[in-house]
Amino acid sequence: MAHIIDGKAIARTIRSEVAEQVRLIVNRNQRKPGLNLLLVGEDSASNIYVRNKSKDCEQVGIASVVQRLPADVTEEQVLDIIEQWNADKNVDGILVQLPLPRHIDEHRVIRTIDPLKDVDGFHPISAGNLMIGIDGFIPCTPAGVLELLKRSNIDPSGMHAVVVGRSNIVGKPLSMLLAQKRPQGNATVTICHTGTKDLIEYTRSADLLVAAIGRAQAITREHVKEGAVVIDVGINRIPTPSGDAMVGDVDYASVFDVVSAITPVPGGVGPMTRAMLLTNTLRAYHGLQK
Ligand code: NDP
View 1 (cartoon, rainbow, N blue to C red):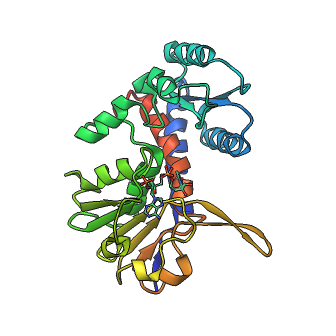
View 2: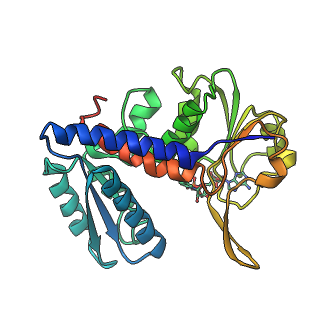
View 3: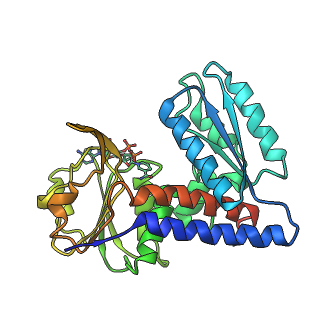
């Protein structure tokens, strides 16, 4: 029977730690940390994400401002707002909800964010810092996975970690972090993707298996080694007779008896991603010094 890594509970603990930090700041009569969020267009999933992020801020005492813009806003107008926020001392973190409408160059927008306010960790400077092992902003999902492992006393050092997925926001940065010679790293890392021949051969040799694929229940019992730690990043909706259900990239029921620890979906990595945005905002407030 696997140990269920309870991301919801760990995220709750992190939120209360952030709330305590903010309370100490306010008690010293200092300005609250502030996060500004930009949402362009009417995408309903993006709307929910932004609302939740803003609600999380409110809950821990971080001041959040949501700027909503119509889908036909120009790229220059978006860049102007970011420049204003870059210059605003009350704004510690800037988050642009992705994806943006096709006529707006996402990379240009991200590059315009002050790297010291880049709480999503998507700026090329943040990516570069991560690559060479300098403290900077780590994208929230990989940061959340490392924090889950740390708080579950799972040390990747010496493990064979197999990360399935090589996206810029999850697979690639997480692989890099797990390979680094530092706490929560020092693993031997294999990155798998659609070009991988015989995926099972790799996943079955994983002590730590991370699925960041975006394919519902693609990782099944035959993919996992007995005693492996499985981190399921995936969020997929599948139809069931009683309506849509949210499932991960791992077939949870089929691997549960084989693995030593596993994150559920929902309630695993998802809540941690949200919690790490709060810790990144607090770090931005402190100028990355904490
Ligand atoms: P992307 O679609 O950007 O990347 C998916 C990766 O998986 C790609 O590298 C792709 O390979 C690889 N892949 C796809 N199919 C296969 C396959 N059959 N075998 C091997 N590799 C495969 O997704 P994201 O990284 O953005 O997200 C991954 C999942 O995580 C999604 O379900 C997403 O919803 C979820 N997610 C969850 C978050 C959370 O907070 N829990 C946050 C962010 C994402 P290739 O590069 O060759 O195309």
